[in-house]
Amino acid sequence: MPLSVREKYDNRIHPYLCPLPCSYRIHCPPCGLAGAVHCVSLFAIYPLRSTVAEVRRSALLHNLSEIRRTAPTAEVMAMVKANAYGHGMIEVAHVIEPAVDFFGVAVMSEGVALRSYGITKPIVVMMPPDIYDAQHFCERDLQLVACSMDILRDFDAEARRFNKVMKAHLYIDTGMRRDGIEPRDAVEFMKECSTLKNVSVIGVCTHFASSDDTDTTFTEKQLEVFNTTLAELAHAGFSFSYVHAGNSGALFRHPRAHFNLIRVGLSLYGIAPASVKESLLQPALTLKTRVNALRRISAGESVSYGRKFVTDRATTIATIPIGYGDGYSRMLTGKAECLLHGKRFPIVGAICMDECMIDAGDEEVKLGDEVVLIGNQASQNISAREIADKLHTIPYEVTSMITSRVPRVVVD
Ligand SMILES: Cc1ncc(COP(=O)(O)O)c(C=O)c1O
Image (cartoon, rainbow, N blue to C red; front, side, top):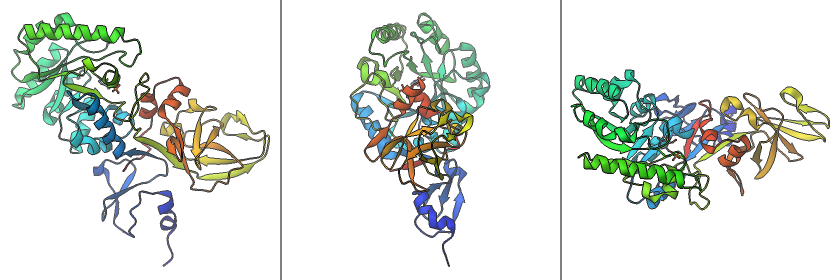
């Protein structure tokens, strides 16, 4: 029996494909891999697209051990909000659950999703909850930040209905001016909290506005306000199992901010904060695709919408199936490069919603050749920070922009 087209090309186009000629392949929503298919016999996973965001398990685990080495006194809250900064929340959470103490998310629905996919470690929702969220917090054992007495009372009543005690973290605004209570109100707030029978404030926290800045003045000021508030709370008889303030910037630049729990996102994904030059972190993400169309065009021809790019020589144009609909920003038009055959090539013409075009010159390109947009190929690298610099933004945004159409695939 001749091979089907899929069988002929799958191993080349989808390196994650189960090597066995197995006919039991199912779409597997329960495994949480968007756009992926589960091979029942081997539980191997392969994506339904050649455009994938690969997330390297060994890099995540390596970064966690670097984080623990840097903050040996602290437990670790892995910030997996915003789809784990675009890396795939469920995929990442399953890989790192044994190696972390807490998960941190921004909104309740992220906590609910983690629980639905079997995550059992404590989860803190770091944004102030909505009054309508109380039942879900209760049912899924999600921890909340305490910064409004009205909301806490509602949560207390809901927890009573469920015969549960809900866990909360007192959030102090030491200068971010985003969430949390005023430091001067902390003691009174805790006195009121202590009248609630079904809410237990187990932690106290704050968040830094510029811990990755080389000018440390503002972070030190925030830290001082936090320490003074902690002292006032202690003097009033309030103690907490967890004290947390540090994010990735504070992890590397402000050891005094480690306390006994740190909340790390960027460094977990292997991206060092802007001002940290020496870091042993390993980027976990590779955004890659494969050439899906090729043409040789003449000098003077334009490429893509708007005809902004016109060739000055005969050249090979290789089309790749990734565009702004995948989170590869159209604002990279005229600036982006990619890696093909271990070399850098420019992406030319407007980036379309689903595709963009490489000016491959006289390179001998074949359909199916691998193209890396973020990550390593041979000795070359394109970092999320390089792309962020081109877009005048931060790496957080670059990776978080990758849309749900791109399958996240965990590789070793
Ligand atoms: C409240 C809070 N804590 C911790 C973090 C993690 O910060 P980073 O990714 O810089 O480690 C964030 C991220 O924005 C956050 O909003």
